[in-house]
Image (cartoon, rainbow, N blue to C red):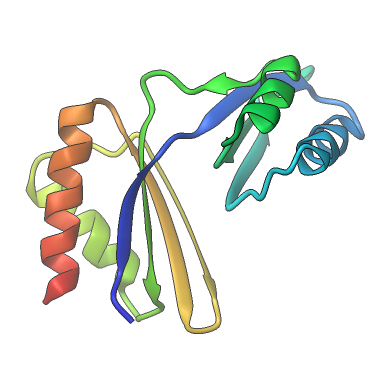
Length: 141
């Protein structure tokens, strides 16, 4: 299995940090037809949590996401890497990006059995393009 490396749009929102807010958001997105691959939700302050989701695709899903205060995260240039779960994968990806002098804005990863998924975010489109090339080269070896 080869690695799939792709650009992704991440949507984000600041929401009240209260029980059930995230659940209601996800339920409404699901009811609109969303099939999410990625979610991070974390507390920012006592009253606010920040939610990141991807993909938010299709007019109906985007309408619901917008109604919940979500929008495509501007200034967040994200990449998704999926493929065989191998020891040191995160080190290979981040080292390839670092060798190009590119600073990561954020990163997350998970493995499910023999498959790993790695998301990373960069500061600008040029960094994203350069990082994709660097990661493709590193994982082709």
